[in-house]
Structures are given as structure tokens and as C-alpha cells.
Image (cartoon, rainbow, N blue to C red; front, side, top):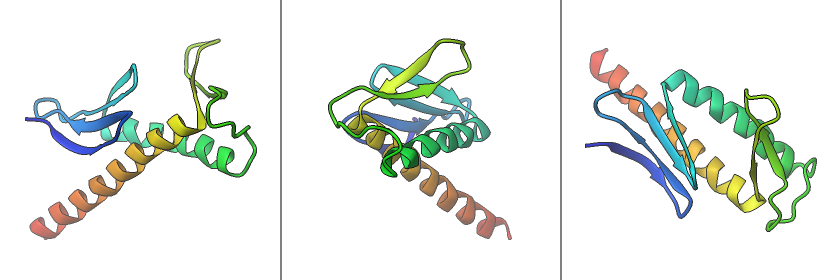
Length: 110
């Protein structure tokens, strides 16, 4: 059974018991990531989230105007301020629980 780390009205993040990949599902987006890929994605989204909160990106909560570039040329994911905040909540809380899990595993082995 998958282990859920965090969920909200927009999506969730869980670990697949077979592959150990983290599955982030958010709206109509899905990402299956290794731990390294998850943290890279979190850093990428975090940089955009903090720019938005520093008023470097328009803040209309209903307008889908926050673009997140992808590796594909001329393709981006776009979010409202509310959607971006919900995605960041999932990523941040999942990362926190992953850190707790690592600390507990390290203390059990040490």
C-alpha cells in the first residue's frame, strides 16, 4: 500500500511501495520521481513560489499567470497563485516528513 505524505484539495504526494518513487499528483499533472528528482522539483517550484510572494510575479489569485518552465521548449505549466500555494504546501510538507523519516531511520541504525 502506498504511503501518503501529504494531500489537500488539489492533489497529493505518496510513495510507491514497489518502486519507492514519490508520486506527486496535482490537478491533471502527475510526476513519479526519485528522491533526488523530487527535491530538484521542490527547489524549482520553491524559487517561483518565493518570487511570487515577493511581488515579483503578479498576484491575482484567480488568474492563471504563473508560468513554470519545463525542459521541453516552448512548454510551461501555468498556475494561479492559489494553485501554486497548494502545490508548494504538498511539496514542503512532504519534504518535512521525508526528513523526519530519514532522521528516524538514521537513529534506528546508529
